[in-house]
Image (cartoon, rainbow, N blue to C red; front, side, top):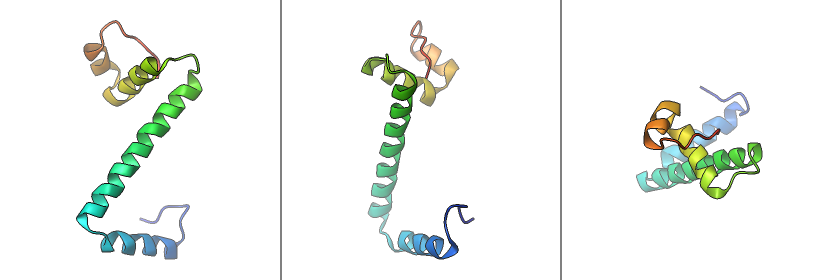
Length: 82
């Protein structure tokens, strides 16, 4: 499936580059993408809640990752909005 914001030619090139990567390169790319996603999520929390301390940002991030119910079990009494 070709993303809507990508031309067919660019998509073919992306697939070819991925196919030519070693397993280690693919894992490195995945790790970098995950790290960027986590930082983007934390930036969104900071933008919505500029009053949050870094500890509160970490808790809000945990609530997003864990979901409301599991978060409440893991961090009882630490209600925070993501």
